[in-house]
Image 1 (cartoon, rainbow, N blue to C red):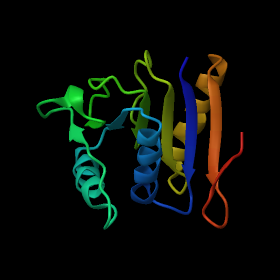
Image 2 (image 1 turned 180 degrees about the horizontal axis):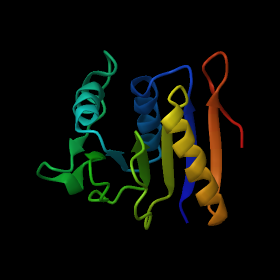
Image 3 (image 1 turned 60 degrees about the vertical axis):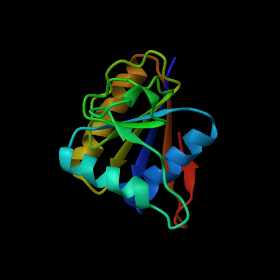
Length: 149
């Protein structure tokens, strides 16, 4: 059964947090699926993952391109798990969809956005009512991630 980890962005941006989470996912030997519902944000993330650090990049592709099934990190507007990922990252309120075969679902939301905050609280309640395994992560004042629930 898939675990759901909520990441509450308060001090950092998605662009600062997502690459590190993807890197840790790859270190586990897992593939990742990044479900992005906004095409503009998809373009920005696609570019950012290639250039996020001077000494590193995160190899990835888009679901709409050839060989999507072979990508270690797949960016998708539909959320279809074409690369048999073990980790799903839901960005900007993207729908969860099917979780078969997934080990972990990351719900990343901007706590400075009232709509995102409300939507995440509703997701938490719905998933909890279904008996899902949940974890809530927030940033410390120093910027480290701490499990809070």
